[in-house]
Amino acid sequence: MAISLTELWVILGCGAITVLSRALPFVFVKQMTMPSWLINFLTFVPITIMTALCCQSLFVANPGHLATLNVANCLAAIPATLAGVLTKSLLMVVVIGIMAMAVLRYFSIGG
Image (tube, rainbow, N blue to C red; front, side, top):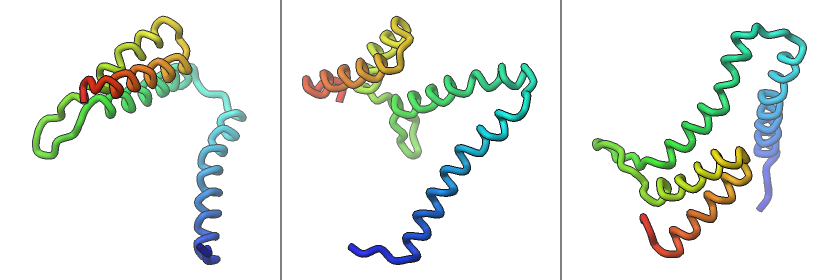
């Protein structure tokens, strides 16, 4: 499959915009001093992002109806959450979560 010059420029342009939009804020913030209230506020950003991602996978949207629980994901989230609380390691959360989901799917539990 051949790629046209226009497609190449679009891919390169999107890559450049992605890199710049993720790198430039770090360059500017590093040269500024932020007030303590802003630094305190920004410490909540990672946990809110993780909560939004987790809640999105725990519920199934039903147009016109209330959302329902994704039972398999909820069951796999229990040992993953416990691993996070006990080890404080993101790697352990991911490994335990994947293992729990594999066991649930192997035994056809919750799905």
